[in-house]
Amino acid sequence: MNELRMLPVESVTTPLPGSTRRIEIVAVALVGLLVIVIVAALYVAKPFFLPIVTAFVVGTMLSPAASFLEQRKIPRAVSAILIVTVALAGVAFIVGLISAPLVQWSSRLPELGSLLRDKLHVFDGPVQMWRQLQVTLGGSDALPAAAIEMPKIDWMQPTFEFLSPTFTEILLFLATLVLFVASWTDLRRALVMTFAGRDARLRMLRILNEIEGSLGGYLLTVTVINLCYGAATGVICAVAGMPNPAGLGALAATLNFFPIIGPFAMFVILTVVGIISFPTLGAGLVAALAFAGLTFVEGHFITPTIIGRRLSLNALAVFIALAFWTWLWGPMGGFLASPLLIVALVLKEHLMPDDAPNLPGN
Image (cartoon, rainbow, N blue to C red; front, side, top):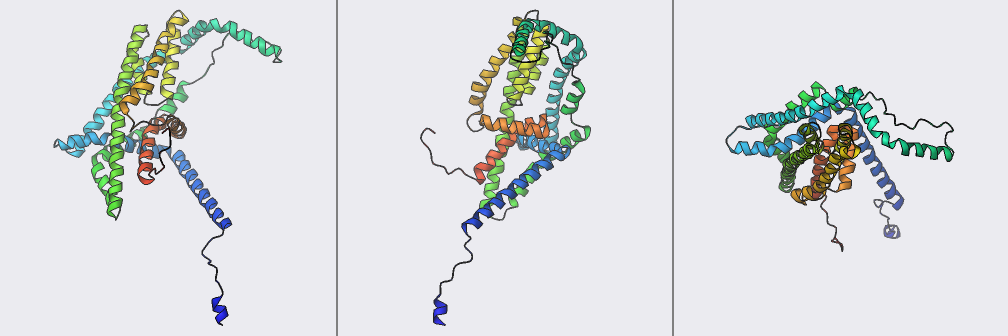
């Protein structure tokens, strides 16, 4: 009996290496499935989630202004209504500047298409040489016409449906925005008090304060930069003799809220408008090239210097976030990409602090 008691007993709680790997694989698979389900839900329920998330992000950006007015003895609800009204007035003003030339150009699409085709006839020779090279290298025996043909695309209706939200989404966004700004103080207190421990409450409070400060600073800084950027674009267009420079400047300021894609789209617009509006190709490209120089200076020197290191974002991360949210929710997703990336970085810094050592060259 004593010998039986002295026999070593192996621990059954220590998992074998193979079992550990299987558990890790299952955990990763479950996390992957959860991410897929969340993305699918956000995509399918876009009419609900997009206005709500946009209102939360914009409301967090506007909350510092509401707190400032509240310190001046203005009730929080009144402050929320005033701030949202001023913001809507600014948006309406920008839309008014943009819509006038857009409607005018849309009514002249057939004429503008033929004008653009005539201006691009200088490229008929290179196009003909390229097609002859294709035939020589074994392409089709039938040589097509060398003239550049403008594609006939019915783009107005699909573009309008892609850009414009429904009336219900607008109402949902406005109602959520006003209520969020008016009750943000109570919501923040409730979120902090959800946690039982003092350390957890302090961490949550720091996270909320940093998100509010970062998003508020981002909105203010980027708005001022984009207004100056749009004004400079308008001056460039006016000096170059472009039609409706105020509308083009307002469009540049609006598109610059969409990093990378917005300035590129504005460059294409200025190129097309310039080619159509001027008798020579060189004169038509003056405004677009000057705008490209302005965009280079703004993107590489002005914005990084003003925003500073705290709000500076990795270009690759911004591009991937922009591509993902634009695919998921369209243009408004592109607008939300940078703010949501800032929120994710703040959460990462507080919940998963970086304890990596300082490597040489950092």
